[in-house]
Length: 623
Image (cartoon, rainbow, N blue to C red; front, side, top):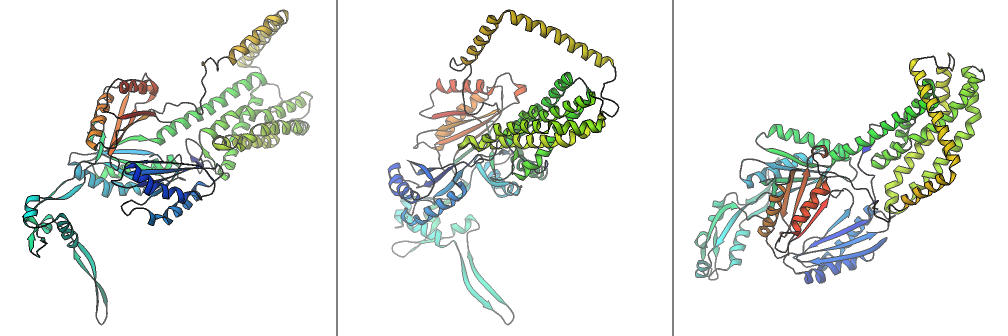
């Protein structure tokens, strides 16, 4: 079960949000609202389990957002929304693009971002990445889609001279229709022989620029005019529409998304395997992994597992000090990991993953797991002190204390089980936390009734007294010293009861004041330094991609002066020429003196003190 349980940063969540995105090229915000958004709203209004609906319209695009009830099936709701939108497609303008329905969840962000660079024209690099590299990475297990950002397209430009076009009595439509009509791939019937049947196609598609240069265009007086007489034709790089850079160098960026049910760590591992193949077969290209969510997940879970091991060791030390014997300590220390390992099986059956919440539950329950075994073991030791044989003492000790152990476990169960059934988003977060503790507690009860008595019967065969040893004498002396000093402290407290009471009340009041005074803040989830953040840039909708690029370059120049920055990946343009984004990855936390909030606050101050020509700039730490 351990090797089959998935690994995630947080438990899988049923995020009850659906969005419908629509594009209407060339339309203003009012046209988008009236002709696209309102028909979509009317269609979606009949969906069930919809809590709220909100819409927005802007130049060339619009969005309708649905917030569902928490118990709604978001996947089914997305399917139903798609059917509703398709049913009113005929009501939308012909120029409007097909609306897209998206279910939002924690996986709607790329898990791996890769920048590809090479010493070659950017158009050739884009073609190589888009047609070959992306296809290879798409084959990695768990990958759902790959977005290619940056680069330049190649195009055949037909530059028409208006004066010559007018002289030949031609219109732009005449030229466009001639180019379209001559580029055909049509079925042309079937050829039969006595033994075979063959389908015939007429292939009349352009293969070279020269094929277009040979075209003739018919004007209004039925004359055939060579296309070259009114236009210059050339194969060239298209105008820059997308921005892609890594650390200021032109690049083609790959944003890789995973399937909603795929494991982020395993998917990342599969991507890196495919990436290793690409590096081996294409040594002239540089593949830079700018961000990888699996790195932070592995680090976070590794730290949590380290805390779990530290808890085990600390528990063993405390048990040794109080039980004062290696035999008793060993019996309990074997019971703890046995209960945890047995819990893996139930976690696998329940569909849980190793994440921050489930591992936090396992870490918390270490102190709980020792209760049953200690109670049983202490009673077994009592019977040994009465002179009974180890086997008899183990059986009697367990039978006498059985109800007490069951009561201890049930107290833990009724404390943590309700956490697993909380409603809302909080309940989804803590479900695995609460149930993991309950599962582990039940197994600890089972272990205390089986494994612990068996170990006691074997470990105490030679007598329950521990042999004399320097180390044991030292531990006994430490315990006697602690008892003596603790007794003195108690006697002093009895003689100064008012001071002790007032001190306790004062400390309690001081602790309560930590929250309202702002010493301890409040937030939904604790802040974590994941070492990455994003800079989002939005200019007025009328701005060109060149204007967006100017703003991005100013921000890049600032990032070059920040010593904590390892990589920054820039993208912009595309469907929205006025928007851009810079993904920044910092060096490891151990290699920098400042936290991510120190770095982002410096950048926010830089943005505040400079004029970016009307651009809205937001800096967001990765959560």
